[in-house]
Amino acid sequence: MAFSPACDKIANIYLNEHTGASDKKALKLLRQSCFMGDNRVCLKVAKVYDKGQLGSVKNTTQAKIFYQRSCSKFLLEGCDILGVNPVTYSFKTYLDTKKQHRFEKQCKNNDYWACYRLGDMYENGQGATKNKVLAKKYYKKSCNGDYYDSCLNLAYMHSRDKDYDKVIPLYTKACDNGVFYGCRGLGDYYHDNKYKKKNLSLSLHFYEKACIQGDSVACISNVDRVTKEIQKGMLNK
Image (cartoon, rainbow, N blue to C red; front, top):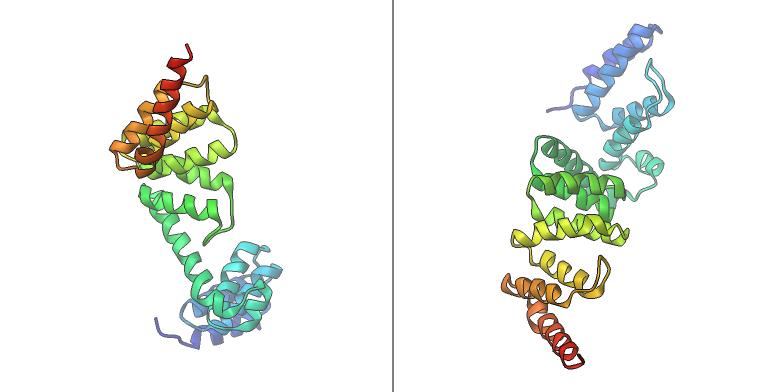
């Protein structure tokens, strides 16, 4: 959409009227001018939300959005307020923010791959601020929608939190649907006695299943190791 200075000029007319209604009209036009490409106005809108002016309530989320937009177009004041490097920000952070919003919309419409990507972004702080609660929320929705990599990642998160009752069902779902890391995870749990009584037979079963699904680590190392442990245990009886 091409930039037109008309919106900004009309907004200034409303601003000179100094009434609540005219202030709101002015803010609406300023926002429109920003989205039409007047990046200088984006910075102005950000400050309005930052200070709660022109009939708006102080809104740091909206302020950040417009500071981000101004910074992405190399308006250094916006970058300074955000505390970011304009070059790095313009070509990464701004795009990450747009990507995050797109994924949120897609996930809301039950695109479970998008939910997975959101979980990954929030878990690792890449493209979004780290947030374990949100990461688990999006992984769970994705896993429930049968995107099995999300089941695996959610299992990893619960494992780190030592919430083992939630781990086994997630690994099992991933394993049963061809994600060999889920099978290996089950093998590890029954071998290392983290979840319940150590069970080498079950451990071997899941390592073998992981191997069949293409897990070279399970094939080369784990199956052989557990087989020897079982044989050693039988000899010691």
